[in-house]
Image 1: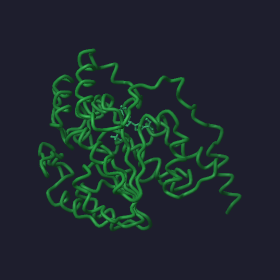
Image 2: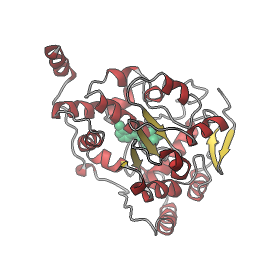
Image 3: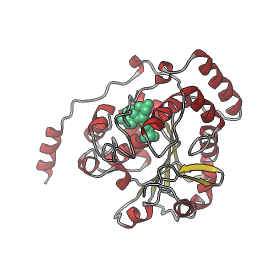
Length: 313
Ligand code: A3P
């Protein structure tokens, strides 16, 4: 599938024609979830790949073999992308499914489901910057123009996958309608990765020992994922994702928007945010000082893990 310049519009929302077709979007909207499914829901650039990695590491008790040998889209396929049905057919065991779809498109399919839904949110300013840079390297997204042009389109929701506001409000305001729902933010994951891995393990009812949690956290760090070809998208051909124009694992920080936003743009976003989110109680951290971050635990090496596995077998 190429269709790099095509756009698929579904229920008034634009999707890249590369990877999305009318059939694949209809398949997603009519999907039959199983109670054992885990569903990662995000607006793009909010920490999707990070959560895919965390779940993989949790379900493998910190053992990185799967994370280092199977691309993220094969272990946690996007429901709305055309290859999903084939990947799920070949999946044995509990399924991890990823989606960027807004709530209203998946609500009927999720009704009465006991599937575990994890919603990852990220502050709007960092999402807009990350998404802007992603548009420059992803040849299946339109040329974003200047950041100012892009930010205006983004605030109006006139970008692929639709409005950040609609997405986040749609999902969080219906959290009570979903039987198993976890809301977590990118900022929380950044500030306390070990605590976040623990939270996910608890939510999935898949307990890990402290050592396994530490090992999982280690492999989910930015530096580790940046080097992992299974998640850094370097497996994707240059004509689809041009790594000379940027990196998928770009800088992984909270508050990076300050390096691109003008004061005027920041004020504009604050104003639009206040009016759009007036009916929401969500709070976002727009920056997190380095000293507020819990240091990564690194006192557990893969050698000790291997020794432990050897002892156990
Ligand atoms: P930046 O562009 O700000 O660096 P998604 O997976 O939803 O497309 O999100 C991609 C964003 O998540 C990118 O943000 C990427 O660097 C960041 N990211 C991915 N893994 C991360 C990790 N382990 N730690 C911090 N940020 C991470």
